[in-house]
Amino acid sequence: MIYIGFGFLMVFLKKHCWTSVGFNYVIAAWCMQLAILLTGFWHMALVEEEFHKITLDIPSLIIGDFGAGCVLITFGAVLGKCDLPQLFVLATLEIIFYALNEGICAGLLMAVDMGGSMYVHTFGAYFGLAASYHFKNKICNKPPAADDNAGGYLSQTIAMIGTLFLFMFWPSFNGALASENQQQRVIINTVLSITASTLTAAAMCRIKFGKLEMEVILNATLAGGVSVGSASDLVVTGGIAMAIGALAGIISALGFMYLGGWL
Image 1 (cartoon, rainbow, N blue to C red):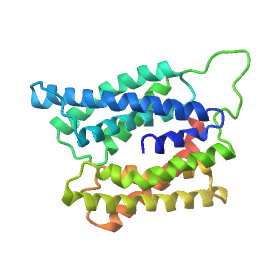
Image 2 (cartoon, helix red, strand yellow):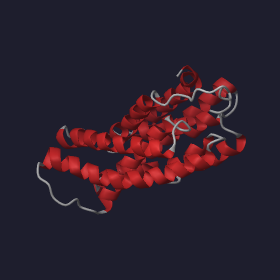
Image 3 (cartoon, one colour):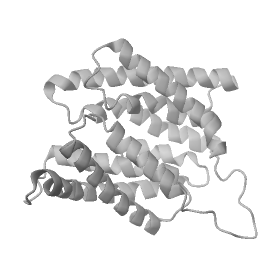
Image 4 (tube, rainbow, N blue to C red):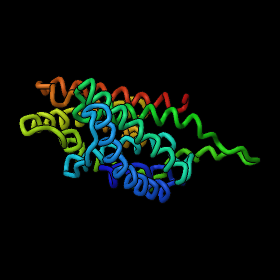
């Protein structure tokens, strides 16, 4: 999900393909290591109130993946606007506060967020929105081309690899830290929700454009996996999981159709 899913999803900009996937690769590797250290640090500082060696095991690697995913969501908001050194600074700052936020919410408040919808996706989205405000277009004699923020036929087709990878592996992402009894419920709810969001996002495209609009299909179809994440171990009815995903697909599709230009 982190290296192929997010990596290839980022190549939809036709003038930023190689750079997008390369930056994603390097930044994800850095953030994965950093998230393991800082998440362990803040849990010791806030929850355990004693310091010891950080345990390295499979769950700690998953926690590192979660941190990397948060930064890559932020990366989507500043794609094409910053260079690699700037991304390293941005990612390092974000992981510090991501780990602090996760330590407070999960460790002290004990808020349930099985799939990281709050700690990973929402935090990354708002951090990216705030960061994008500080990356201004360079002032130059030649104005930026109108299609600099657009995708091409080939770039968007390749980006579908990322979407399909994310679609297939989102159930395992949500259920990675679930216990044996919870894991089946998390996976079923995620599959039902993400398939529902795929259908409603595609339907919104047909209603608005009369065809499948690739920007919407690349992103809004995945909204169900995000939206059900926090409650994926709590929902016990298939219809509710599908309703969550269907609504998320509609809202996300409308956002890409109408909010992008306004923002």
